[in-house]
Image (cartoon, rainbow, N blue to C red; front, side, top):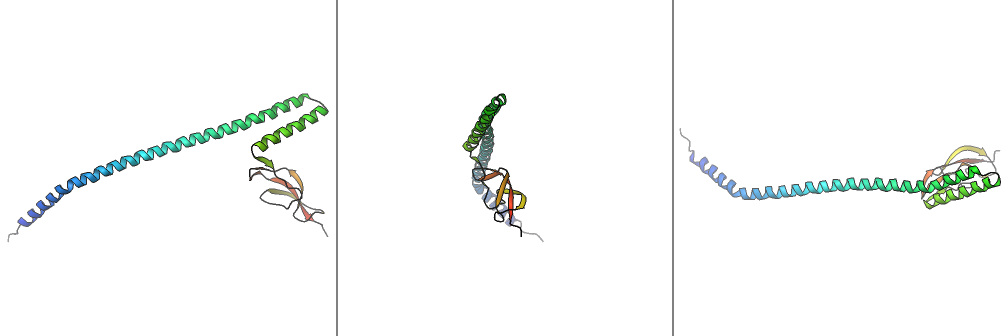
Length: 169
């Protein structure tokens, strides 16, 4: 028995003709893909360079901000050195002036003390180091052992306080 092989040859020829016809479209798609891929790679490289540049600029800004703050604090150190040479009443007055200068510099940078005496205990701003009986209402801060500070609205150091237990019966 012989099989008719003429039909597959026609099918193969038709497929070859279709492939030749699709070849320009395939080339166009390949060119479009290559173009988009190269644009994507360039964009990714540009973004990576941008991110690295922003990181460097942020580091530089942080360094210079700290430098400016340190220069302002050097004024305080200079005044301490002058106060070391003073005696008696001049020393006390000099120390008061240094404290005012230091607090002014801190306030200029948004750093201020946390007020806590005679206020209710707040665990977000206060650290209780003692709980003692007193005439004040229970849970009220009656003494400040170490002053706390905020920078803007963020607590940077909690105040260490003594809290009232109330009157003991």
